[in-house]
Length: 425
Image (cartoon, rainbow, N blue to C red; front, side):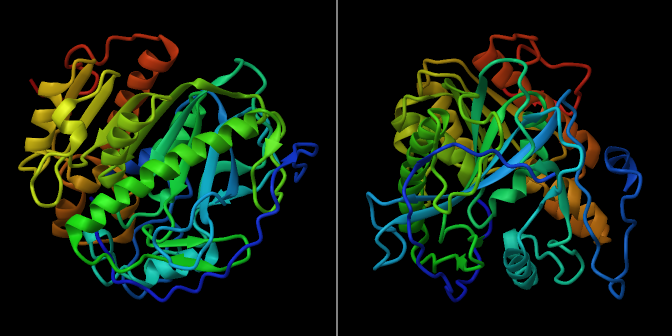
């Protein structure tokens, strides 16, 4: 479910919520086969003494370029469940969308400066369960393939909306490769940092909220899922206001031209990795607005081994399970879920993959010059380029089928185009 980190001091300052305003202004600011997916100027592997590497992400494969805007949201109807005394629940979300006019606009950063520094500072403390080496990656200088504030592509009408939920102890940016690929295929994709459960969340004023002490694992995970369900519902509510022409951003940050009215909120999907995949199932169980979902290697059992309610009664809407190779603890929950689910469902296994293979770790870790044994432990034996492109193909095929009515039959049976993906009976 993503590695737990030690709790860090919280340096969060309260924000003043200014309410909603009508959208009146649009922004105007102007190695192996993995390397084949990366830009030609991609950094080579560096030794321990080399300067921190500026990481490179695989480019999206869709026909659109990708735009991005970050929103600071505040739910004033509830206190923050993780911090006593905070009278509202504040979140940072990223919105990725198709654009045809990205030229001249700055690339969206992978992480903001203070978040990047914190991320790097805890990598040596078995962060994300992988023990990433501190000081070898320049996370603050790493950029995405999304352009900040670019106008939304005006062709294609309203676009289906996807919600991405990261694993426990993972920032929302840890799924950027897959998120931008989906946006390049024409989706609006919203990534959520669940504040105080994410390792770090940087707010527009530079303040940083860090992960709370987990305490009892079973109680923590149960609470985290309840909070995520509420957070997801709140974000969907705010997207509805945005789509109606209001700006939900607390700081009145201008929205990209064309974003208001571009969302088709009758076609909403949700996907996530580890605990984020679990959250996709539990959110679907509580919120009928979510039409289809994907769980990428997330448990459907509680920490104490009991089944989660969604595994006990299943779902009536389409749901896809994507798992790593080899022994896994997802078995009992996934088996029960499939047995109790009357709706469409599939279970896939990515041969040679490990738990982190469904995240940006698959593309980024090979650039850090890690020992082969470490890479195998963290992202398995599958070729990184194969893992990235296989994940993208099946995730997009699933949402295309259930949100767009485009059935390419990739999910019907094993495909010779993607031999690494195994169908589980």
